[in-house]
Length: 455
Image (cartoon, rainbow, N blue to C red):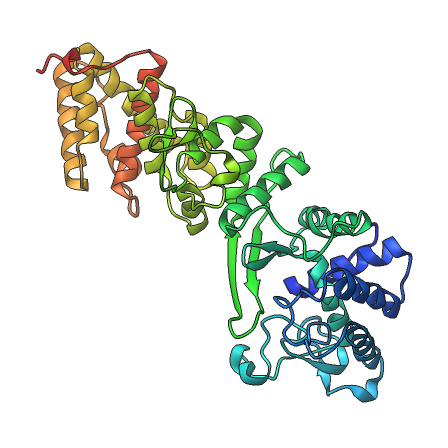
């Protein structure tokens, strides 16, 4: 599709425009009446008018109409939009700003806009929205540009050329391939029912489709239904910094990242196996689960990233658990790019934390008390305890190296890098543990209960 599609910013109208433009190119027709007739044949004859989740009691979904009436009345309605005398009002289109004849677009035309008993669904308390004929016509083609995702529908906000190109192939082109081979019976169905997991899968597909070094996309997925008495819409946003982070790890550390993510699904009746990096059924039948059996289960990592919450504690727990089983933990480079792109942590601060942790390990090795120092780092349950631990280690370092002009932690490092305003204390502890375990693994230091000589 070569021609540029005008973007309004409204995801429903823009997705309808995406499908309409593709269809016009495919059929070599610019006449809206011909395109609408073609769409009617698909919606009514092939899909049996199963677009109720998009439009409520429209000409096509109206159960009182037989198939020929559905198509005839639909064509009559869209033909009427060409007659200015049929307009309900004159003014500016709510979506595109066009000035001229406007028409009421309630839930029978435009999902989630109000009408009848739902007039107050929209903030202006209108009986739907007042739109121009062009925007209403674009909305007619929306079923070709959405996915059935569980009990609701899903679409992406088309906020960049890459996303438009990707979503066109994912939905509209895939739809017409199915229509061409006779397998299309309804709105295209996604393999995902969980929209949060689906959004991360879409991000992966976009990263693989556009092999640029550092793209930044702001992904916004609408998960909605206009069905019956329960209209609903949830919007899931994947921020640009998270997308940049995913782009890096999926290009360079894909296997390590997915091993980590897979460990944090919530699955009843199954247990994660660190050794095989797989989920295994509990009970007598201990067979592994296929990804298709759990990909719609909640995933703690995806939920935290979407909520803007830290996953540092998950990195730490994963690294500790893997180390205890003599396995490699999370790649430290994944943690560092996460700190840089998502947490916005300065490089100097990361270096200070790593340097302090390295010095602590060297002290522990010098005293033949690695486990003791590790336990000291793991024990704090509040900021006061962590500060006490660090003071203990500072004193220990001075006792071991009284002539060293460089303290383990300087006052500036303590104030600016370890405990700056707004920093959550447990993240500092967890980062130090991640770095500590990383060094233990790199040096092949394995700890048992009898390893330490308490001093």
